[in-house]
Image (cartoon, one colour):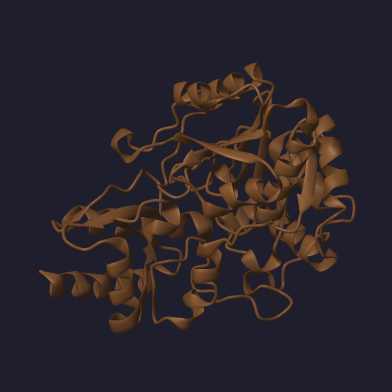
Length: 369
């Protein structure tokens, strides 16, 4: 029985229905939700030659063979396929209990709801706010059990925005391997860096070359092309082969979306600087705002355009409800990310839009003092 994913049901339609959006984490900038067949920023660009299709481009981007790449209809599908594939590696009849899927806390709701829906036993390891949401391999190792099949984490951490060093990711992967499990790293926010790394996909770090690791990502967040619903999974060839068999149970990626994603990757040298500049501007806006508000506690990780903030007197639901009902402003209650005392602010629109929305949020906060 698949559990309800409350966050996705709550946020559906809200970013487009509100005047001031501080809830969208994808870097769409001035572009609204895609309504035509071709996203505006891709119109007029030439397609790559046929031999440079999407799987080929992604393999080159990650410096792996095409056998290591599975293209899916979005990162959510990639994560579902990864979890289902990992669960298939064990015979439930040989276990004392259901196979363990160990998921970070706080975390993104689908990453714990999906394993439950697929029959896994979801246990948690902490990335607590008092430790700045760091990924601590010792916490992973302490929470693993002999029936573990998968450890699930995000980098950047969703929802805090904290970026873990790859050494910590590698140590977590080794800890998982000692129990016969793999590490799944959702990297949709990994490119959110102001100073890009030359050798990483879209300028961000990746765990794709770490042994015993499965990486997922998409065109939605940093590239701001959510309307295409293009995601992928990168892992060793044996895992990807099994994942392809699982993926046949799900809708395949539409050919027009694959073609447009390939077009975007073909022109990434001209598209990425625009996204990077939007990231830099919105990060600076958010960091400055949080730093200047004495009635808010919280911090903005370097390079992140999203973070948690707590008000000194009101919890996350109270702030979010007041923002929506009285100020036509979208902020996300932290309860969806296991932080009910906080709200999550996300700056994905144009810098002008975000600056104006922050002014409205400041007006709301001033009214509470």
